[in-house]
Image 1 (cartoon, protein in one colour):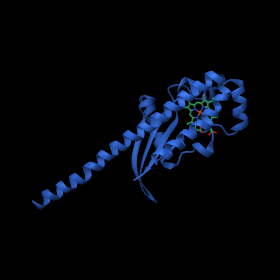
Image 2: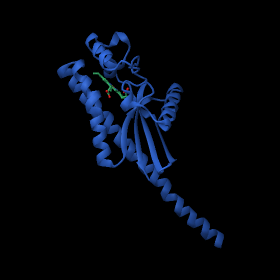
Image 3: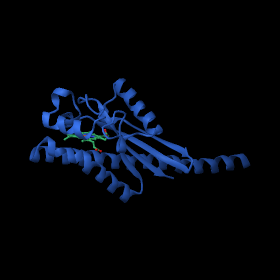
Image 4: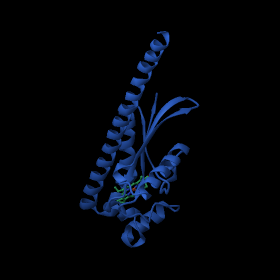
Length: 188
Ligand code: HEC
């Protein structure tokens, strides 16, 4: 009898936790998708109104600004990270993000669709438990103007990139690959 009660108590204790994680993943996914959508929209708009050189500011200023705004409104840390970075100050993944991005790359190589790739985990950190989530950033045709092969990047853009990012590793991408991920970290 006592054992049954204990088992029941444990079951009720663990069930909400599982539901919570599903819920956290759902809201993290929504947030990441919103960033991807907003960034894509801004890029398209600026590319057609001002051309590729002027659109550099979208990936440089708008994207981190949207991410910071999302961090402020949610209380989570929202960032863009990549294994091959252009700006090491902003885009460098931490250890967990590196591991997670490699998992996404492996799943992609195994045939998963880039837009479905995500990975979430509750992690114990020195400051306490955190929920971590990453959603793949698929390479769309528009991205190749600045992240594609040498032939797909216009000369003017190439010159700007060479001048501003001497250690640029974020080229050579084509649609179907992933450029990196939207990383979300939420204290528990
Ligand atoms: C008009 C040029 C341009 C286009 C188009 C563009 N980017 Fe970028 N991207 C940049 C620049 C410049 C940076 C460096 C920004 C900085 O200084 O933080 C960058 C940085 C990034 C980063 C941050 C990590 C890093 O490498 O520093 C990600 C992620 C990224 N871009 C993804 C994308 C995706 C996905 C697309 C297509 C939807 C895209 N970009 C389209 C110019 C572009």
